[in-house]
Length: 435
Image 1 (cartoon, rainbow, N blue to C red):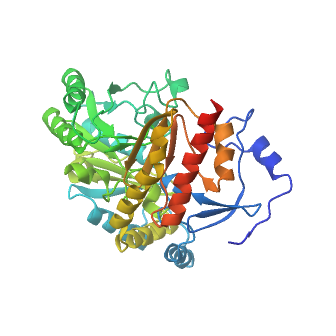
Image 2: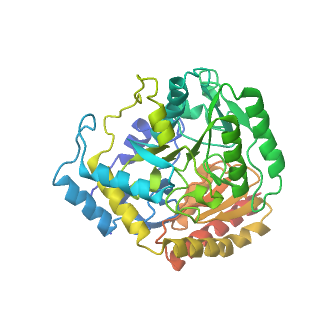
Image 3: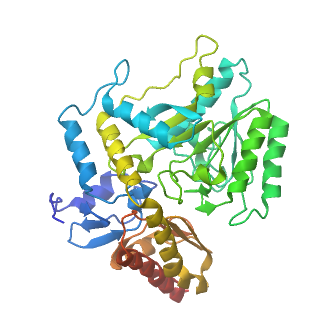
């Protein structure tokens, strides 16, 4: 890899003094590491050091970096047009992408709204649900039901359906819309505990069915809310409850979509279909920001049944042609690759490589689901201490809270994955030795 751009000599001062990074403080900024290029599963820092990327750029770069097919898709499209407004116009990349998404998702999802980020896709899903019931003459159905430990984004509508206690948005509690919460599913590899879990949902629906428009949750894996895994049977019973109480079902597959959990979409493991679904992150293979909200014909047509309803959303960069083109290439690349075998192999190797963490006194739990490996600690990590330790080990791993986890690109080799897991074991052993 080559360094294409030279950083200003005072880059660190500029970065820390003027740039806000995600979830960061301008008074006490955490260390940042300047990346000059990326290729395969490697990030090259400005000082020449290379790091194995265990995060796939927050779970999106499933094919790694500088993938020739995806690079070419961008180059081909930019020679025609980089962007055109989607209001009153359309273009081939968006049409082809809509076709692909309809083809690879369940039969119920037949309509696609292109958004420009995952949070916006969830906002649109919420709007769809509320507008649907408004058009049915049931304006009182304007609340959502969700489960604790969930995460759906950082915008105001999405923050309102994240966990209000353990989530990241407690400062906005008095400002956010109030919705209903049930206990998070606790059934993991088996359906043990599922009766209690479903009973909690049943109680909420029984008490508030006349005001609940939809249930929204992340299927099979709760991501940024704790990297928690749960059993497919929970979703099966949830689908039945939604049908019984006339409530729409929204699945947020932004983190789980495109193979991450072992199936193309996580809901497939339950054999059921949502009414609305959001996707993003890996949609473009991490190349550009793009997301989508898919809906059933019942929802799409139902929004307009009162004769006046149009879906009230329209981002400026909706269905950006560059993003749609690279998404088409990414999906094609995924589907023509042995991705199922790769995911299974990654899971097996992560279980073996992370196994020594079970013996550490600081470890609470070790769990693997598809290409997601999680070491949950008993106490939150000290980011100022742990991040430099991982960089010293030659890996890029970004813990949060009590979780040290990896979600690597699917193209990772045995040696590269072994490097990641060994680094986690080594750093956690160092951490334990300091106690």
